[in-house]
Amino acid sequence: MSEPQTGPPVSRIERVFEVYETDADDGALRYYGTPRTSGQTVLEELWPAFRERGYEVRLTREYGEWVLVAEPIEIGIDGVPWTNVVLFAATVVSTLFAGSLWYHLDPFSSEVLRAWPFTLAIMGVLGVHEFGHYVLSRYHRVNASLPYFIPIPTLIGTMGAVIKMKGQIPSRKALFDIGVAGPLAGLIATIVVTVVGLHLPPVTAPAGLLGDPNAVQIELGYPPLLEGLAWLVDQPLRYDDPATSVNPVVIGGWVGMFVTFLNMIPVGQLDGGHILRAILGEEQDRVAAFVPAILFSLAAYLYYVREIPGDTAFIWVFWGVLALVFSFVGSATPIDDRKLGTGRIAIGVLAIVLGLLCFTPVPIQVIG
Image (cartoon, rainbow, N blue to C red; front, side, top):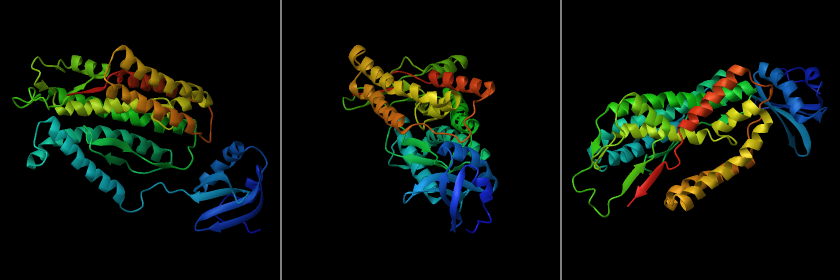
């Protein structure tokens, strides 16, 4: 049996994994053998040794055989990420179109470009959130993509942004840092955008629009954090004139808060799931099991007790279904599962509280 020169010594591996054959192909190393202990213990023992040699390792079965597969770590971005660039450009276009409607501009003319503050606000809060994850992923040497923006014809022109992570999470500390960085970074951007938007002039609907029986009116529910910021800077969120509304940049802040709350739902691969998994360990799954029921109950309360229209209550039905799926998929399992220190736990509690301040039971209603 020849021993791969770039990987850790076979003698080091055989402490927990008996090796009877090795193979190297296209930069990847394979060690065929038999685990001497549980799979999690094998990874906990060998992961640091492979990491030092520049490999990401996983234990799997191929054609009925146990095999350690070690692949070179790729942290950087290889070449121009054209998919990210194209989606970014498409989201600029879709948010300009959506923003023009908030400004009461003609979206099919050059006037659409005047909606750039709305686009900057929306893409700013979403981008900063995702880059928070990206930077901490790089810090902990976890391979992550640049943000993928998702253009779609909605009231805000996008369904958000995501990054894709590959490989194992090294530790609870890394899981926590990567999970909490997005919401905290995003909230800082959200607060800045909101305060700026509150100081910008309000917009007024064209004369006669409110009297149009075919007109559609959008009512947003303001979460406590948005209400509090408006109070702190002494700027109005509501106006006596029904034709007047806040500057659309404030909508960017509202989106940042709504996205923060949704991401802080403590299930599966959502940020809240990562944070709670890092704090509680495997006990997080027990908490996650109750989340779908809470969201379904909220939808039922809004529809049957408060008699809120079904399309509004459906938001929480939709997220209840997603939470159910995320719960079944489960949370991330770090290699080093030792407990967090009190400092990170305190930051986690703060992030959860801030997430709750971004919650409003009726986030949006479409009237007409």
